[in-house]
Length: 500
Length: 112
Image (tube, rainbow over all chains, first blue to last red; front, side, top):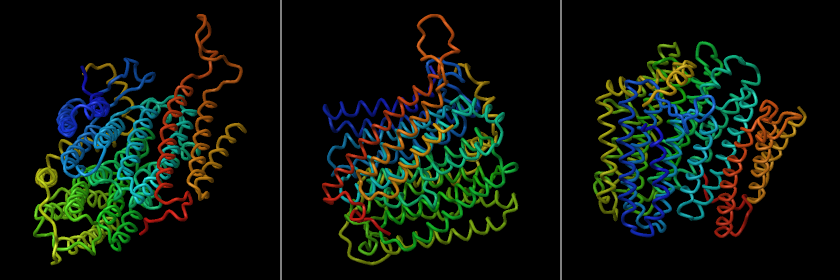
């Protein structure tokens, strides 16, 4: 009995049990969802432990061997992504109890919540290109519905805008799958890596790579394609904003790009400097443009949305640098940003729940009334800016180190200097909402909300202090899994049929 | 070759509709066009001229079959397209309830 398919089977099964549970006992739904997400967390920890010993575990769906059937290829990078997803999902599900209590149709919310989890888990562990598209669409369609969950005018508008952009990306992905299939006659990622090696880097190959980069840039919201994110993420309920900004854009946009570029197309900094310079360009453009736009925002969650676009640029910068430190830094940044931005969106939910508004000019004096929320915001913010000993510092440090090792000293200076932008827009929230004196009619955040926020704060501090262990056991193996290049293919075929 | 290019042209017509049309329903129609184009391309990728349908009736010549995998993929893609189109139309109708218009020029409460 292998555990790999459980990662998406458990949330998928839960998604269809929840409607039945909703008919019988409404109060059980939340307990059920929390238990499911906690079991996913435990399973992800187990998966991480197993990948220390086995670099690749292959599960054959329906016992068809790799080039013929769909396989699930679980390596260190998949284990890392699954762990981060389960942490954010767990915190969000705890937070949802009180935040969602004034919405109707809660079982629909939790069903979609489990579906989006199943989709993201599936994208992270699949070893088949079309299967990746199917899971990506499961996650994306659930997210469109969740953004529109409040069915107010703004939320519907944001959802439609998001859907139009997201589907153009999704259908471009499908079109490039068709072109790749026409060229290679396979959908298995490992087999495709081998076949593409024989095809070589023809203009057709670069056309497909460009189309895929376009599709995933929309999903990850890099700057020319970012316009949906600052509308969609604030419109969603706070636990969903936290999930979407924290991990969703990284799984659908960045993990997929990294997996295909390094392991399937076999591109590397040494051989294809132009392509990697394009990645760096996308990253820098996102950091600068979105960071400056964030400064002029007056809406709590919209500011955080622009901040997400900006921070995602750092991750792409790390991948664009392309040496071990850059890639490890980018992967570490996925963890740091998932915890930090997830936490900041949860604090925004806590503030909205207490005051009913997100307008920074109307909020004031919450620092004393809601001390847990305020301190959670400060820890999350300090981690994003990159203050030691929090987790964000070490992620940014690795990226800067990678830039210096490759001789991009101007990129290193830029990455450090642009932290000032992060500091500036986060101080705007801190000043207006928490520091400014004012009469605020707000009470403390409910107990479960505080639990969720404190959970993430503890992780931010723990992962920061234990950064050496994080690099040794999580980030380092994941970076090596990417930098292995098309050795990935041999590993998949070599591990097929091993019984785990 | 012409037949492949016509799929790409259909794709671009759909994209043109999405980018330039101001009516929500017409944008959804644009998506339907793109989905047709991609599905058609998939079916063409597996097509071999003069070959048989991939159904085993006797124990003969599987090498004379067209490639069945793209047909299976197209079925999956159609189901996903159905889901997204239905969701888009639902959201478009709810937007009509709120704004009393399908014109994207008048649906702009979000800005900044």
